[in-house]
Length: 113
Image 1 (spheres, one colour):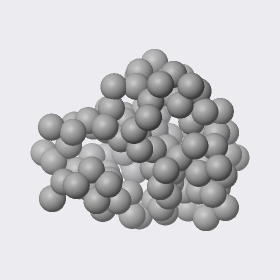
Image 2: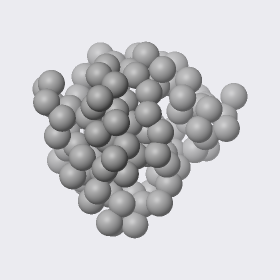
Image 3: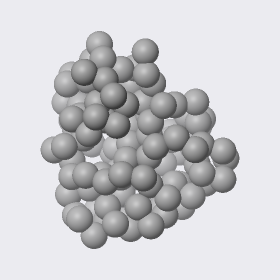
């Protein structure tokens, strides 16, 4: 089963995504940047919110450090702000989408039905 790290500070959004993806992929949740830093890099995909926590972009350095640590798999940037998605893609994310599209995009990227 594919394994995905979801970095998202909204526990409600995490629950919704987990329900939509349950049984199709294994999900590891990180509600903070610190949680994500301790999660490691053994994933098939990482989903990255731009603002963890709050409303200001702050995960670009996390994306860069994940890449430096050796993760060469796909990273999906997500935000309700298109400009924030672009910021994450410039920092090293491969894909981007808005928050409502995350479950569908995860399955698409991983080739899971």
